Length: 44
Ligand SMILES: [Zn+2]
Image 1 (cartoon, helix red, strand yellow):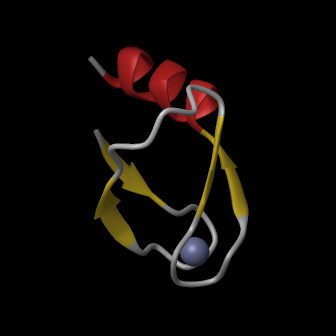
Image 2 (tube, protein in one colour):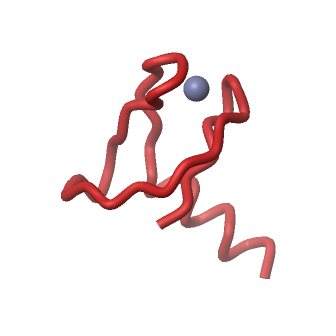
């Protein structure tokens, strides 16, 4: 799934196992995927 870091705007394709938190490979910030998902749904 595509992830966009809210802090540094870095985009990458995440294929890990975690459904809740991933770490941005650019700034190492922990990102809540669940939140991103909800945002995407709201946009549609
Ligand atoms: Zn980042």
